[in-house]
Amino acid sequence: MAKKIAIIGAGVSGLTAGIYALKAGFRAEIFERFTAPGGEMTGWDREDFHIDGCIHWLTGTADDPADAFNDMWKTVGMLGEGVEILKPETFGTFEHDGETFSFTRDVGETGSRMLEISEKDAPAIGAFVNEVKDFPYFSAPAVAVDCMSLSEKMKLLKTAGPALKAMKRLGKIPAAQFAERFTHPLLRFAFKTWGADNASVGDFIYSYAVFCRGKTGVPAGGSRAAAERIAEKFLSMGGLIQYGAPVAKLPVVGKTASLILADERWLNADYIVPACDIHATFGMLHEQYRDKRIEERDAAPAVYPLWASFLLSYAVDDKMENIPKELTFKTQLAMADAPVSYLSYTAYADQPAFAPEGKNIMQVQVPTNYEFWDKLYADKKEYAETKTRYGQEVLERVEERVPALKGKLRLIDAATPKTWERYTGAHKGSWMSWGAALGAKPMIHDGRVAGIDNLYMAGQWLMPPGGLPAAITGKWAVQRIMRKEKRDYRGL
Ligand SMILES: Cc1cc2nc3c(=O)[nH]c(=O)nc-3n(C[C@H](O)[C@H](O)[C@H](O)COP(=O)(O)OP(=O)(O)OC[C@H]3O[C@@H](n4cnc5c(N)ncnc54)[C@H](O)[C@@H]3O)c2cc1C
Image 1 (cartoon, rainbow, N blue to C red):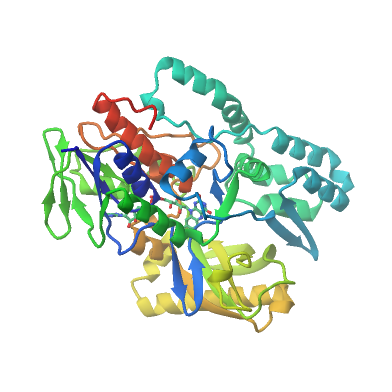
Image 2: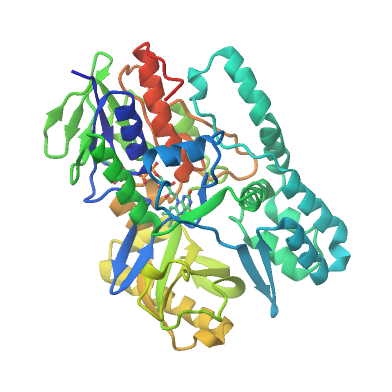
């Protein structure tokens, strides 16, 4: 009988590990604490509306056999026949003192529009356009780096080197500092507000360059449909999923781990792939198993901040055909013990199934802090009232900025970091893994826990900052297992 891999978590990384495990001839069974697949890649219904809780941006959607992400998405069924890929035209639209500007797919056109706005900024605009045009694209290696031979590593360094070098150079420039190169307030505002406060401009230029090269898109139907499609593929290949089956402990005897579910069932498997939150994994292990790489990151939140979001969803009594579908604008609000100086909204006109005929759904994602919501959650009434109050304040700011929406918005959902913590077990409700402020060091974790032979982790925490492409760690976990089995893993 084929050897068995038990996987913890049916998020995109666990499902990816499962599909590659079956492809490699193993038996695979996933234990998922929630009642549905997807983890953070999900969506939920409110009244007649669908709230997509994840994909605004999927890297690896362009057909390219040399792109490891694209190959993975096709293998697991994220992409494939019948899956339409939507290609948003803009990468953010910004408004300042009545003037508007968008980063479009054509960086040359974007540069020309920037010049129209501020000819005085020509040198900074030219330098920016060239950075985007010249930024070398690199996705991820198809084989886990620690499974590569020396010559493969050398080859990888040659291919990935230019992108890493560019990232290292741009990673030293804070986005806010880069914004100061422009004199025009609208351009400054656009660069300052695109990413997190402490982000480098490298994140922006990399992401925008990937967008301009057409490497990103959004699968029609959104996140929940994608999760169901991938889970279906796993099941159709012979995989098993147990929902409502949280794993509680990972006892280790000698160097071999087993599973204990929350209902106290013990299970043995030849291999275990925890694809849940990495903090949860270490919480299931005896305290003698520790990992410095994780502890160091957790101990330096200013350098490795978590991603905490307050996600507000509004039913829109308008299709928004003649209203901007996305906008970032200045505001002044106080929310969750912090000032909010701008708001960004996105509407889903290109996903007609998300709203009834003639209507739309709009989301506003506000960066927030976990601790505020965690404290408030002790009083459920106060927690619920605060969400609604903030939701109403944001609604008023959006209506003020876009008068055509006046009286047409209605708050139908408000999710906080507590929501993600409760539903996915994500550490402090983080919607990706660790971010990287200036001074952060890159990390690709090998997924191993010293002292345990049959445990191979996967998931977004192994490949900060996370995001859906981190699903490739599920494939890498299976390659590591194949290497242990002395099997050829390169063609997987
Ligand atoms: C609002 C939002 C917007 C996002 N937008 C994007 C985007 O546009 N593009 C992008 O690339 N990424 C985006 N992301 C990030 C992306 O969703 C995540 O990086 C990715 O889904 C993480 O996948 P994962 O499988 O590694 O982890 P998770 O999704 O966290 O999956 C872990 C799974 O393990 C389960 N689990 C946890 N503990 C246990 C246990 N003890 N026993 C059993 N099961 C357990 C959880 O229930 C979960 O299903 C977004 C996320 C959010 C929340």
